[in-house]
Length: 233
Image 1 (cartoon, rainbow, N blue to C red):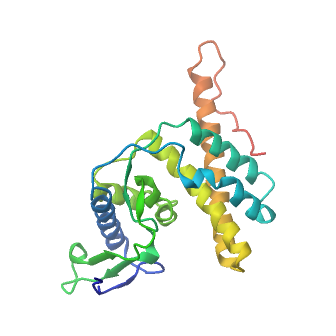
Image 2: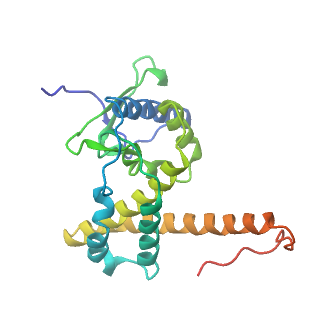
Image 3: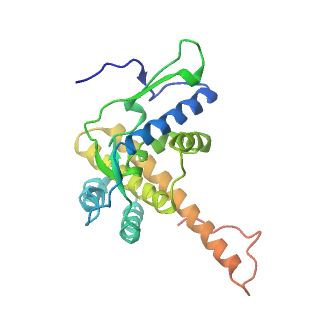
């Protein structure tokens, strides 16, 4: 049985900063309800389908990739194989702003806004971060929205979850590029390329920062303070 719900998709909606943070807190609470619908279970072996399909998606996306993209993706796939397995929970499978409906409250109080998630056709067990992959585009460069989501979600991500979220977002971008290229969807290709470029830049910046921190922590090494960070290659 299907139930009609009010509201419009949040994708492209223009909200005040306060209302937007309130909405993302509610989205976090929705994600928590989905993920806690049944007890978590051990991850299967071998790893999930996203890793298994990486080579096929890379082959389909290759003509659209920047020269350094393939090496970056393969590096992250190797990292994924060494991460501890994440528990599997119930997931929506396509948790993004296009599938989240919003309607303003009649009394004008954002705390009473109506929020609902639709389109469960890809719902299946998987790691919880599976549902954050496409949603994470919405809070890229906007840490306040991410904090609001986590407040509603009820917890922060573990280090392994944060690492897996980046990996799965990269694989999703490559999959989108491959699908868009083969189905004549230039918007999907461009969105995937933008996401991939952003994640690669963030990964490079994090690697440079982590390398600098390790150097400062090693006794007997000269200080690198004030030196220019290495330029991206």
